Length: 372
Image 1 (cartoon, helix red, strand yellow):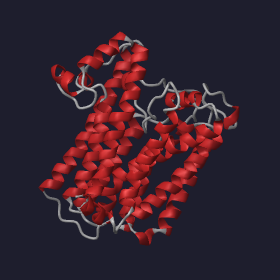
Image 2 (cartoon, one colour; image 1 turned 135 degrees about the vertical axis):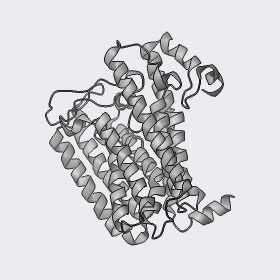
Image 3 (spheres, rainbow, N blue to C red; image 1 turned 30 degrees about the vertical axis):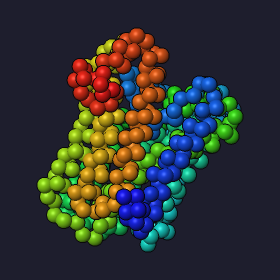
């Protein structure tokens, strides 16, 4: 079985290099933190507003100072102009890298674009002293890559290509609308609590920024790229079959993922608007899962793989590595972080939720003790 997978991936080594790099970055993160008594797993990409999340930042900001002048428990302020310039440069670097390696295929050129744009955004984070500059990359990078793949693939294929493209943009646009990133309009005067926590745990500035590169930038960038590989194959395939039953089912899986995540986020937003801080969300989808938004995100990426597989463009088992790694990252890295934080902030109320509610897959509470 292993030899068959290796042979299938031989034509495009990027397919197995990317998941391997994700695993390597995560291993390096753990090896660094395991030397400290307050060890916790690295934070998840994109963040999680689960059970309250972070307060929304406000007022307009001014440009930040250098990273070394910012206390570990305080976020560097970053202007909107700086953020726009950073992402403009990242788009340019990604397009240039993809163009240079276009002849090497969709996956390789896409990987080059991912690495080049990630390097530019990391430079922006480093210069401003705020790792949250990277936060919107999770949604923007797949959008940019999808346009590149669509154009280089000839923009043909009917519904078999148009529907997956539309679903990807619906997934990303949903984030932009329902969870708007303040950096685009007012700049940043905050930083993800996990980034600030790690600044305290890694007092050496060079060590922290090396950790930020591997954990907060490269790992999520490679993770979302690996999960997007089936879409790369689909959008650039010279011939795909007309939409059939399996493709329609795969579209349904992707739509379900988007819907679950959207409903979970909206339910949580309404809860936060009508309840006091410290209360526990346990109604709607949150009655059946402690993290239904994470479940919806993973279901979306499973749908991306299913769309490629149903169209017959994912012949290698390695193409499933992206969505499987995505699940492992959310389930075994992100969820424990959020549960630990919620226990500290909500005490006995959340401990009860740990005993009665599924951690990930929504299911009736009476069965959660078995499956959580």
